Image (cartoon, rainbow, N blue to C red; front, side, top):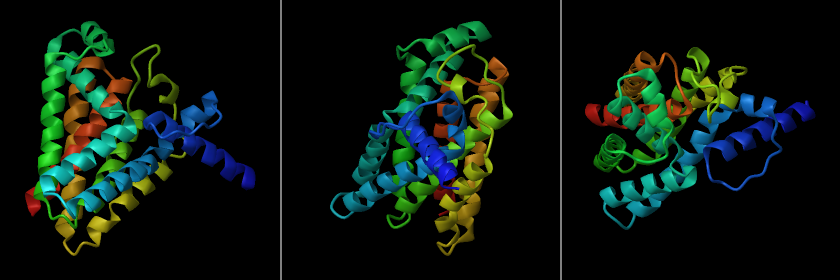
Length: 252
C-alpha cells in the first residue's frame, strides 16, 4: 500500500511538473508520464486555489476588474501560459488553413499569428470581464471549479479521441486512460462549493458552460484534424474554463 501511494505521489508530481512551472523534480518514466492525466484536475485545483487566493486578497484593496486581472495573471504565471499557447496555436491553424496537413504545420509553428493573437486576447478578456462582473465572494470558488473541471474536460478528449501526430507534446499522455475515475471525481468535487452556494442554478449553469465550451472547441478541431494534438488539449481547457465563468454570469 505504501509503495502504491509513493508511486501515485510521484505521478502527481510529474503532472504538476508537466502542467505548471512549480519547481518539482519527480523521477520520470514513460509509464508514469502516461498515467498523469488522472491527476490533471487535481493540478487544476492547485492552480485555481492559488488564483482564487490572489483574487480574494486583491479584492480587499483594488476594484474587481483589477483583482480578476491579477488572478488571471497568477494562473498564467503558474502554468507558463501552457494552455493559452495551445489555444492560440489552434486559432492560428484552424483559422489560417483549410487542409489538415497545413493546419498541423501552422499549429506546430511557434510564431504567433493574427488569428492566435486575436483569439487569445478576446478569450482572456472575456474571462477577466466575467470574473469581474460576478459577486466577489463567489469568484475564488468559481476559479477553483473552473480550473479543475476544465482540465477534466481536456482529459475527456484524451480518453475518447485520437492523437493525430507521430510525436509531440501530447504523445506521451495519449494512452493515459487508466484510473480516470480519479479525474472525474476530482473535477466534480471542485464544483461542490457551487452547489453549496444556495443557488442550484450556479452548478447547473457551470456544468452547461463546461459542456458547451468542450463541444464547441472539440467539434472544430476534430472535424478538421480527425482527432487532437497537444495544442487541442490546451484549447479545449481554455474554452471549457471560459464557458464555466460565462454561464454562471448569465444566470446571476
